[in-house]
Length: 331
Ligand code: ADE
Ligand code: ZN
View 1 (cartoon, rainbow, N blue to C red):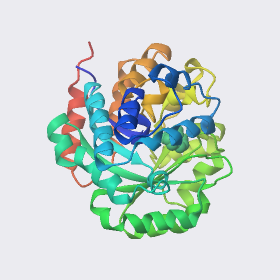
View 2 (spheres, rainbow, N blue to C red):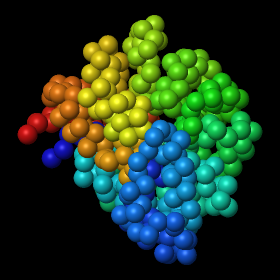
View 3 (cartoon, rainbow, N blue to C red):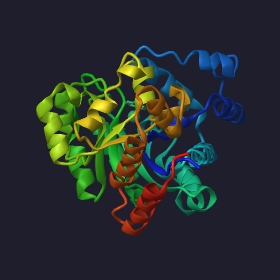
View 4 (cartoon, protein in one colour):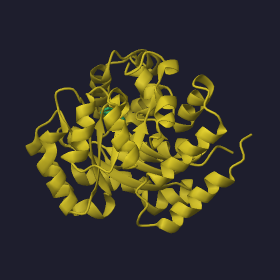
């Protein structure tokens, strides 16, 4: 039995495995510029975040109907459950679909068909949805996206900020985060993946985020680290992603052990597992094997994932999950 854990940094579009991409392409009459799944996998050699994003957005062309989003989310939950995920807070990128003529209802209703009570009963995974704004699009577009989401807010727990980080500071999205907070939405943002430590501070100060996605580059600023430790700000760290997108040279160079030693509240996550060579359990195995993290550290990462999750509306469930972590016996 795998260690029970929550996944807090997972882009549902980044779970599109090549096999499903081809299946959906055939179902929807979409032509993919790759001969087969092998040729597509060959394209998974990324130089940086942007080179990944180009392929990530290109492949989304196969996602057209509610059923497509349902199948995508159902396949993720099955894989996640098999790796010990008990709770998942799932990002989606509506602007990347709205711009292709797929409306908000199709995306949210489709995802919800696989999540919600169904997902919980079928896979034993509780879920929340976090709607991300694309930071390389305008602030106006983000505000329009928030407006388009208003009929679906009963299914959306929070907002996030993703896509190309460099040159797109968090402060650009001050107003839309204010509006999201006024609607009762939780707030997170990618910061310090490729962008500088100042973007992490800005996400906290200007956007009021409660959790930082990646946050890796905080390690360049000891005062920022002290602040993150003091305020118990969770970081959703994604080691296999960082290797594939060259945020670090090799997994052995990953700062996760130093981050934990500094007292940061780190969680372990997969980001875009179909593209980066592994789901969240694979990330746990990788840091255990390559960074020599022992059982106490692995348990700490699992515990942190539930402490950092947006389960304030169901504290009894959080306690149950935390008890599972403490009772877990490593093989
Ligand atoms: N969208 C999907 N994955 C992402 C990542 N790792 N960083 C920024 N935007 C993303
Ligand atoms: Zn991400």
